[in-house]
Image 1 (cartoon, rainbow, N blue to C red):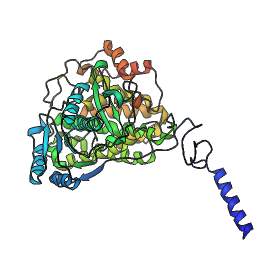
Image 2 (cartoon, helix red, strand yellow; image 1 turned 30 degrees about the vertical axis):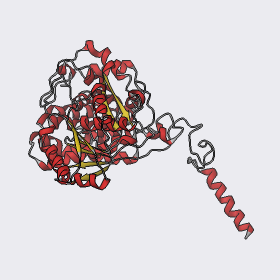
Image 3 (cartoon, one colour; image 1 turned 120 degrees about the vertical axis):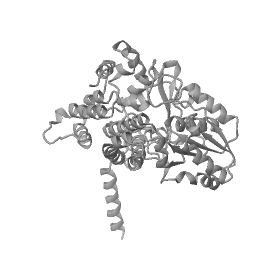
Image 4 (cartoon, helix red, strand yellow; image 1 turned 135 degrees about the horizontal axis):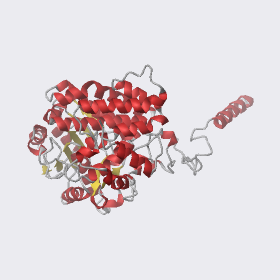
Length: 466
């Protein structure tokens, strides 16, 4: 019996010696039972996180019951001025009233929010003792509500404490937030699934945000009937966000190549690099976009197409919410933040605006032509999903093919002809590059490293699309 135990013990020792996983490898330890990176520089793990999602026509009617089940006594209901009188908001209000839920409405959310508009919403949340939040709207509303919940739950925090570095301190969120139910009315941002909240930081004229799994909604109520109220251009620009979420997360730097390796799991970022699980969501979202997006834009009454794009937004949200995005999004933030006089069709706002999805997609042909050499097979696969014939295409031509495929896709959907068409010129390139540099949270996930000169060339290549 003793010799048998010795053999078993030796086998276990050999197994541990051969295994390079964090538990058994001496490059991953710090104290008893801790699996942290003390030697390894690159990441070794990825983590999947997403909000609970409920999907179905008319499912918004259940929100009042959900809040009752949570024991909510005072609810903050956030939306914007336009949505406050539209059917999605009416549906939610009816559910709250029917179920006897006490609520206060904040309808001053800014489309494409700023640090100022965030702070105004936060002040409203702090002035009331809310024990639950509901956001009815697109990404602007949902992101604003996430921030309000975060800072009302951390009343002594400075605004920049949780904002992504290098603009903010990027501190981890350690406190508990109140439940948040997100009701998306656009089919684009995927904000109902993610722990990300984006805003325009006015002092730098560039977008940044807050990224923490702690701020993701408790529940996303995905009611496809709400998308029927989207104007044509809103549907298009929202869909472009889905398109780029899928493409960027699928082509992002693989998670095991990302640095630094976190010393503690709480430091592992929400955006971790492409990984086998996010890949599944991204590819599926791209297939849905290819099949349904043009229909959803051209016929607002096409419930099948709009419902499919609503789900595609969720699929891509789960994918990019864990894998991350890269250059299209990183470069989009100064495009939106430095807007001068552009008036976006289909948006009823009192300020110049380059909608988020449009600001993202305008650089996509140039970006994917640039990143293709690092993972040409993925770029070819994306081009094929979007309708290109790749049967006789060389790997070295993957970028050019995907870029041409994207240009045709954008042309078919009547997208403005590049950055010039939204008010920029080559004289603006230095400012656009300057606004991209602080976006390292996403730009470092590009599969291809880049310099400021590379960024300048990408912006220049995006001045005209066709």
